[in-house]
Length: 149
Image 1 (tube, rainbow, N blue to C red):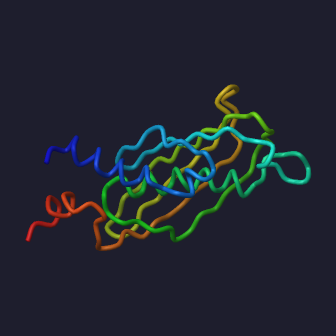
Image 2 (cartoon, rainbow, N blue to C red):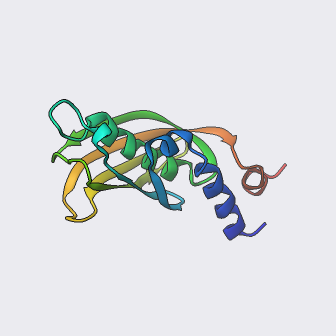
């Protein structure tokens, strides 16, 4: 299996995220340590102030974080996520979450996540997150390559 085939297999697995599908989030790009996810805010995603619910913004960033951190093919689970909400978004806004690996250690990795409005480019939220990298691979072909018996 080529590296391109491995990455396609990993991306295909990540694309099966049922919660992302439920929200209507589209995983636009997946590379080891990076992902970009988009979502158009509907009226049902607003809080009682008429602004996009903070939980939705957090979830969008979390989907990007999960995709980027698992794009190596090794199971990675969140240890911590902190978020700062910087600008309100409204129904109709298309939000883009990008997660970028900042540090990849032996068992942990650190990510920066930004959520912006596609049309204006304005920053809506920023997060820092850490994963724990388990000793398991969710794509057998990747495990065989990286951990030969």
